[in-house]
Amino acid sequence: MEKFEIKGENGFVSIQITRVFGFPESTSPFGGYDTESTIEIKCSNYYIKGLVWITTGDIFNFYKELKECQKNLKKDKQN
Image 1 (tube, one colour):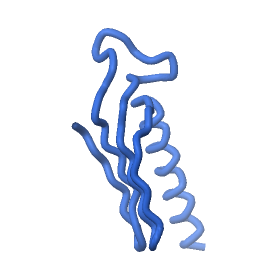
Image 2 (tube, helix red, strand yellow; image 1 turned 90 degrees about the vertical axis):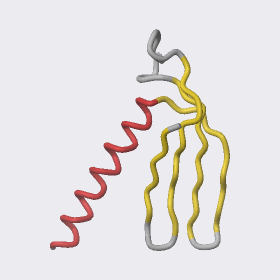
Image 3 (cartoon, rainbow, N blue to C red; image 1 turned 135 degrees about the vertical axis):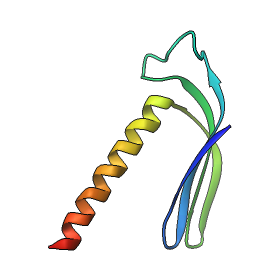
Image 4 (cartoon, rainbow, N blue to C red; image 1 turned 120 degrees about the vertical axis):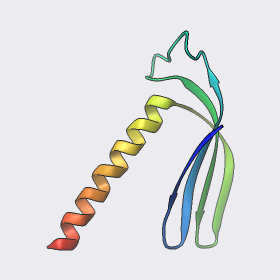
């Protein structure tokens, strides 16, 4: 199982890949490999945990978008 977590001041987002389908023989038409994963989101008093079917390609795109957001926030903070 692979897991990553993004922590903030009042919570976190966590995705844990519990199952990968087709590896290494076939990839998903949506990019990467299909996965069954668990997502947890906590923000202040809000908390949710559930299953999500997401591709490894989607996870990578999520990472790239977060990285771009962080870069833009750093620019805004400097101004």
